Image 1 (cartoon, rainbow, N blue to C red):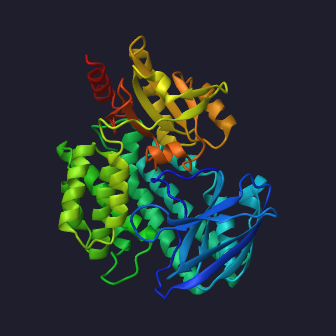
Image 2: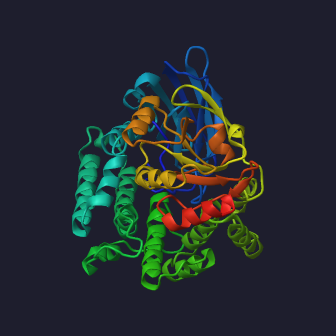
Image 3: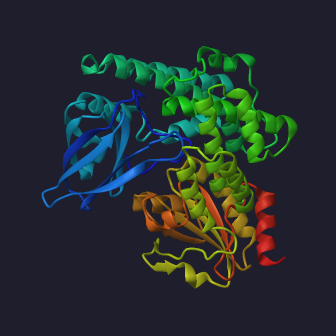
Amino acid sequence: MKSLPIRFFLLLNLMSIMTVSAQRAVLSGNITNAKVDFVKAGYRKSLVGYDDNEKDFRIDKKGNFKIVLDLKKEESISITIDEQYTKLYLQPGDSMHVKIDYSDFDNSLIYSGRNSEKNMFLKDFNNRFVYGHEQEVYQRLANSKTIDFRDYCDSLLVEKKKFLYSWKGTSDLDKHFISIFSEDLDYENASLKLSYPGMWSYFRKFNDSVPEMPYSYFSFIADIPQKPAGAPISHKYFEYASSLVENALFNFHHRYNLRLTAKEQVAIARTILKNEEVFKAYEALTVLNSLENRKFKEAENFYLDYVKENPNSPYLEKLKETYLKIERLSPGKPAPGFALMDEKGKERKLEEFKGKIIYLDFWASWCGPCIRELPFSKKLKTDFEGKDVVFLNISIDDNEKSWKDALQKHGMSGVNLLAPTFNNKICEAYNVVGIPAYFLINRDGTIYDNNPPRPSDEAGVRMTLNAALGN
């Protein structure tokens, strides 16, 4: 696929949970038409966060590479080569080979060796249901009525399971793999249906309203029992459990019109999540999300309290790493500089806008929530025309034509720059792990707000901009 996906629409993260002693897994490969001389490989070592354990492996002049990983259990491995990305399945002890043509990346993948049949299935499955279909789900969330969306999700689930059981090589897939994959499809389907009320309100900007939800809509929850203590927890199950909490938080917010603190959110999660491992992971995820999405001081206090109260948490290393990144972006700290090309091929640097307030927007043409913000951005820019505010839009599109087409289609004004994919220095410097993401930079080049209101928060963003201007 062409780009790393935003957190809400997750790609297939298949992994079974059978624990074994660490063993070496080897993926050798050959790639043609590559633009770089290294491949990145990594996987998620916990329920919280993104792919880590990421390492670089050299591609030689003939296009050969060899990835060696020490695995304790079956993992979903992310493979990134320049602007292209895929996931594959590896077990401890595997020895596999892959052939890739960079110019036709998704379609060209050919695996051989132990577990190759599972990865050929994943390739076909992703090409059929994932790659290129991200926008379809956004459209359904935005435009479907409640029952219609439920029926869409269920029909899609039936189609996916039919593909699983009728795939040309299904007879070569072991029963354990098929069982786990089918179960994860159920969790994915349930998560999607649970997201409907919140995403419906978000896309339609009915912040004070919720869609009409028949009681029967949520009947599927009764069919998915919570995992007992000690049961293996897949990423898809954890995403489902998290969706249970997020749906409850959404309903609480709209019933009482209250903005919950992160600690209050965790208290509600405690009443919903019965599995202690799942709850602890959700608590750590809330800390992580707080660091990435809340005002710095509030997030910092929550993080420090968590560290004090959970000195033996397995998530401390990941949270500390994120905290240090966010701390460098806290109000008053220098905004990371950059030099990027605009749509006319001219290099633009952050420093050239010193003396003005900068509203920095990370987005992409394929990002549904980003596109949803654009009409509000256009109106915001009009309202602040002639004032000392620069609207600086950085796209992470990996396709320059798609980016330029989107600029024209949506009539985007301001300063438009391109920084392809999440795997670049500016996304790393600003800790951009999902989009849209916004920053407000002061006249002196320091961070004014590490998480300003989005353009769709019309009153909030105008109040913040006026405050930054000194009005």
